Amino acid sequence: MNTDPVETLRWREGAIEMIDQRLLPARFVYVACHSALDVAAAIRDMVIRGAPAIGCAAAYGIGVEALRLGHQGEMPFARGMDAAFEVLAASRPTAVNLSWALARMKRVMQACASRHPQDVADLLIASAHEIRAEDIRVNRTLGAHGALLLADGARVLTHCNAGALAAAGHGTALGVIRSAIEAGKRISVIANETRPFLQGARLTAWELRESNIPVTLITDGMSGHLMARGSIDAVIVGADRVAANGDVANKIGTYMVATMARRHGIPFYVACPSSTIDMSTRSGADIPIEERSPHEVTGYGDTRWAPDDIEVFNPAFDVTPAELVSALITEKGVIHAPDPTQLKATFQS
Ligand code: MRU
Image (cartoon, rainbow, N blue to C red; front, side):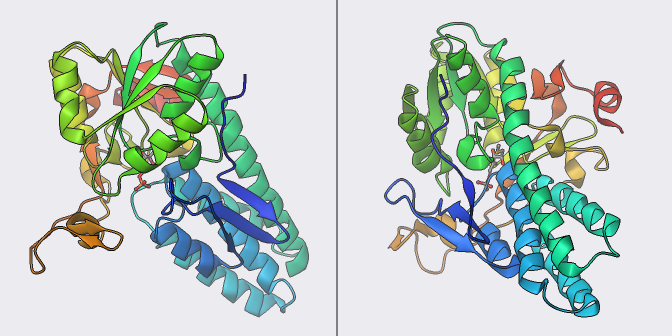
């Protein structure tokens, strides 16, 4: 059984199209991006979001820009491509998959620097396709590893959306759940709504419903109550960046969930591809935490619920210390109680 609901990104007639995730679940619309600027804006404005999906989008941003500039001479092409790398790198700071994908695209460019710009463009588009296909393969592999950790009948809490919508397909945290279900286990999901951008209420709830996976939506403050009552067997989340010591940056609120899970003896799992592991960042304290617009906290869409002149702080991510992580699930296998030594042995190239 294939439980994947959607194509988060798709290639159509020289453009990269992405589901506009700001509109879900009310509307299902693809947005076409024809340039690096289009893609950078789509990442910044949350048309596309989720660490692996951001990485794929950035790779296509380089590809479409190369196609756009491919008819120019070598010098203007090189200058335009430098600007494309810069604008994409600056689009969002926390998910390391963005710089991972850009570094990979840069290596491809450097390896074919002597070729005609149009040939370079073709090679860059092919690399973006490969990054996208690889992401789905990797998620399926890590999903299979993680599925072994879930018992038949498990009730699994997740936070934010680490699903097919947050990747090229299948998902990371939700990929583990999909794989467990595909293996015949009965799994139900409790989804935190995930204030302020509501990725849980809007995206996880929608994505799981589309796949006929049982899901119950709760507000973020309710998960401790459910844990205390014995209604949650495991927690699985994704990650935007894992530091070399195993600290995990993920959607704001994850740290509270991990702390409560430890208090109640519930395993707290983090599922991510190895492109999310950043061995050059020593600890969570060194991970840049994005701060987003106050408008995300004071209201949503056209609705405003806070007073006009209120002071707002809106960090989009927090850091869960490695000591609260029961296991890190990647395509390379499951690392129980991750620590710097295990991470170095597995991910240092
Ligand atoms: O701000 P977002 O929606 O991009 O944040 C997404 C998350 O925090 C996800 O949990 C993370 O990127 C993992 S996605 C597989």
